[in-house]
Structures are given as structure tokens and as C-alpha cells.
Image (cartoon, rainbow, N blue to C red):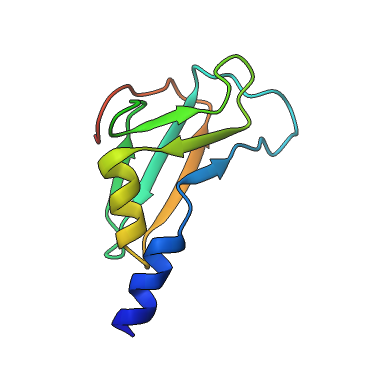
Length: 96
């Protein structure tokens, strides 16, 4: 099982698609990334190009990509999950 989890962590993507339920445009100032670890604890991942996340295209985003320790943490936790929340002001920098 450890070997499977190691492989799963190596191939896990750190890029997540942005989708609005109503199909409308994404307001880039109102997106947050939330990581829920395998134990069920939530942490908001701040927008940060080194250890947080960035948009594929800040003017017209269609996805976010985790970087640095944020990506490493997600890839190392096979029971963790990432949620993209749209509608509240974006939190900047690090994990909150």
C-alpha cells in the first residue's frame, strides 16, 4: 500500500480546473483554494507563486496551479482533497 500511495503522490496533478456552476465568467479577485487533509482539517492556500497557487491566465483564468510546499503537501496526502471556492475575496500568500 505504501508503494501505491508513493506512486499516486508522484502522478497527482497540482493543476485544478476553475468552473462556475452557472457557467459564467470567473472573477479572478474572488477565488480561494482550500486544502482538506486526510484527517479532515481545512486550510486556505493563499495566492502565491512560490508556495501557494497561481492562475493559468490572470486576466481570464481557467485553472489554478499549486506551487512549492502547497503542491508537495497535496501530492503527499492520498486522502487529501483540494476545493476551489468562488465568490469570496482571494486570500494572498501562504497557508491560512
